Length: 115
Image (cartoon, rainbow, N blue to C red; front, top):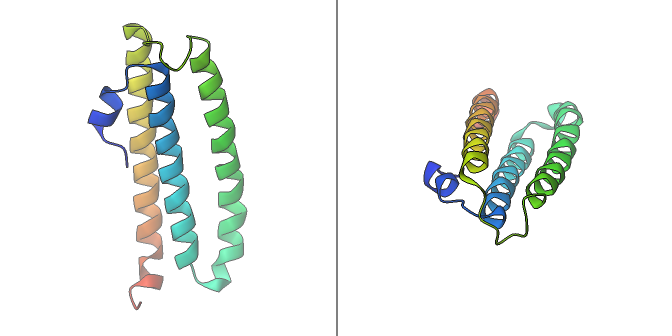
């Protein structure tokens, strides 16, 4: 997961896009990893839930990047007030994703403990 330091150090439009992209990519990576550990009998149901969420995250990434691009090019420094809002949103998003992933790993633990 991305750290507070990585989020806090994002100063430009490109930095913020990169941090958000990393957040999305990390979540997707873990979602796929969890899916690989689920017993065959549950894979179809898991994929039916996860695939739309992953597609939605890509849509959110595109919207987020478009919104940031309205500030300027990737090397544009994000105004502090706007940056503070993005920092808060990124940290909240990261923490929410972290809790969801922890719950998912805990839920599949009985299926993977024998491996």
